[in-house]
Image (cartoon, rainbow, N blue to C red; front, side, top):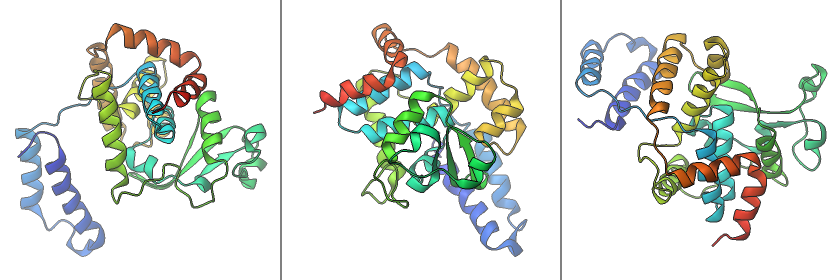
Length: 267
């Protein structure tokens, strides 16, 4: 048994998958269910600390400096829209809804949404952990502009973050972790820390649990509350070099310009 959560997740997913595809067997795995509960008690998961927006900007700038601009936008989008890695990596150009000036040269806005008076940028999540066809708006105007540029010229079924590797999520995690190490950040930071960070930020800004759960696509309020409680505590213990914090504050004021400058120095 390991404490990184990978082994437990694999076993839990296996039991869940069998029950999903063979519903007649649901409830016929009492030993497996008890074993998983015991495993979680004996080896509790290590919580991943939440990232702040400023540190996300630092990670994005470093990715852009390495020539990975699309991954940089992916980090910022993950934070703003509370995306799970699987949700981010499966996004296609046709899942991005653009209205107004952002629409020029990019994916057309959905006519039905236009009739409702929707303006701005949103994304459709085809397959989320909590169901299919989920919806979330892009709140940060800089992220909205970057996303509009990202989809420009793409065909409807093109992935936003293309990757030749079979495991697309693993490739994104690899470069994310490499940048975390380069910046001397806490090694516990993972891509999921972006989602955790935005949820924590919203709670500190006074959002209700119900609104956060809706935006973050949580099935259970109880799990969302537990998530937020951990996030606020972990945020207090987050450590980062003072120079990096200062740089992140500067980048966050105009992250589009910061990414553009990083692109020029790429390589």
